[in-house]
Every structure is written in structure tokens, then in C-alpha cells.
Length: 302
Image 1 (tube, one colour):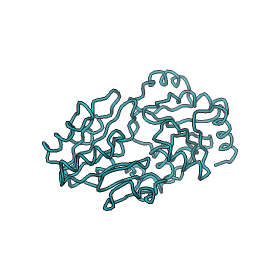
Image 2: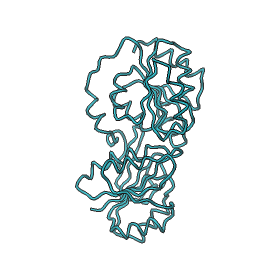
Image 3: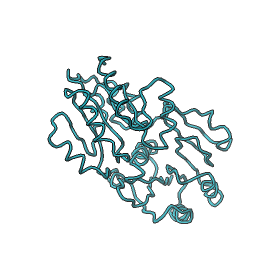
Image 4: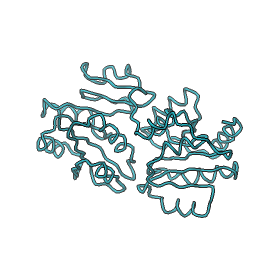
């Protein structure tokens, strides 16, 4: 089967869509997979190429260009992981390609015209999609369907001896859209200087050079760029400061305690779920609240 994955990455969009799509591809290892993406600033299209997949570069996000590509490549199923493609767009694709199977990602309970819908977040509830998708749509919702890279699956039961010095895992997304990393590092240091920090980011981070400069002479901070050992770093840490995103799914899977700071609108559902279920959550960066939560974690002796 010819499968086209339509997703983008950039300094503004982030890297999460492409990363989870690369995990999804393993469910279709016998099929021919092609990615269709725009060449946006700060993209991680190299990850697609490194994984060995064919890449088609789109000039825009309009219907005609994508529809033409589907016909040209004889696509039998399209995976849509793009917030700018909506119900009307999907329905039009099906009308012009009746045999095309449409598989969509959804994180925010939007209306979709699809054959398969995947919401792989821990908060996902299939009942919420009643009247939002066609009756025949297959719904894949919740932790049962969470897309996890192999490193997480292998690391869950690995026991790594943690150091006596408290270690915090920090990840504000691959692009750190709100430029919070340095603010968080400064806040941690005000709570205690005897804390080790493992901070992860990517080359898509617009503020990477400033971050590298800040971390350069600080022995307690380990800065990891484009790391392939996120699970290992999480397992070595006592707790984490992360966004209510895919990273929260990963920390939840590894049973790593965490504080979340909401940085984007598409994190709203995860943020609400975590808040409702008693997790430490911060809607917008708040230095005082973050200090309070860090102190609580340190006092709990976790």
C-alpha cells in the first residue's frame, strides 16, 4: 500500500508531529511510505531522510497541490497530522479520491471526515468524538495507542541507579517557542544550587545559541541537543519540568513525576486533564509557582 504522511515541522510549529509520525510508520513496515512536508524554517526534514523515507516538498498547504500529489503517487492512504487541514479539506479529498483511506491525528476534539482517527494522548476519550466523525470511523483513543519510540519501550523496566544529588529533566519542546529554558534554569538555581539538570532541546530552537552560552560555564547543567537518549535521561532523573504534550505521555509511561508548563494552545486538553487529576501544572510561566513546586518535589524525597 502506498501511504502518504502529511505533516510539517518548524521553529513555530515544533517538531512533535514529525517525531510521532516516524513512530507510527513502524506500524506500516511492509508498506511504501512517503512524507509530504513544506520546507519551513527550523524544520526537521532531515529526520525523515535519515529514517530512509522518501520526501516530497510542498510549496503550500493548499488542496490542489496535495490532491495532485495523491493522484500522481497513486496514494491509497493518507495520514494527516496537520492542524491546518480541517473537515472540509478532508471531505473534499474523499470526494475526489473515493478509494482513498483517510487517517487523521487529533489532539483537541475537532470535527473530521476520516476512516481512522488517532488521539494517542493519555486524556483521550472516544465518547467525545460522537457526532465529530462519520459513524463508520475507527477510533483509536487513549494510552493504549500512545506512540512511543523504541527507546521508551526498552527503558520502562530498566532500573537505573539515581545519584544522591537531585536531578531534574527539563524539556520545553524541541523549539522552546516561549523561550523559557533559561528562565527555568535560573528559577531552579534560586531554589537550590545543589541540583543537577539534564536539559534537552534541538537545533530547531531559535534561541539555541543564547542557551548554549548560558549553560557553557555551569557544571551542574548538561545540555543535550538532538538527543536520541531521552528515555535514558528521564530514567536518570528524579522528576521533570516539561510541557503538557507528547513529552507528558512519555514521562507518564516511565512513571517519572513531573511539573508541566503550558506553552501552546494545542496543549489545552492535556493541561486540563493533568490539572484535574492532581498533577503540578502551570498555565503560563510563573516563577513563584515553579519555585514552590520544585521545593515540594525536593521535600517529598522522591
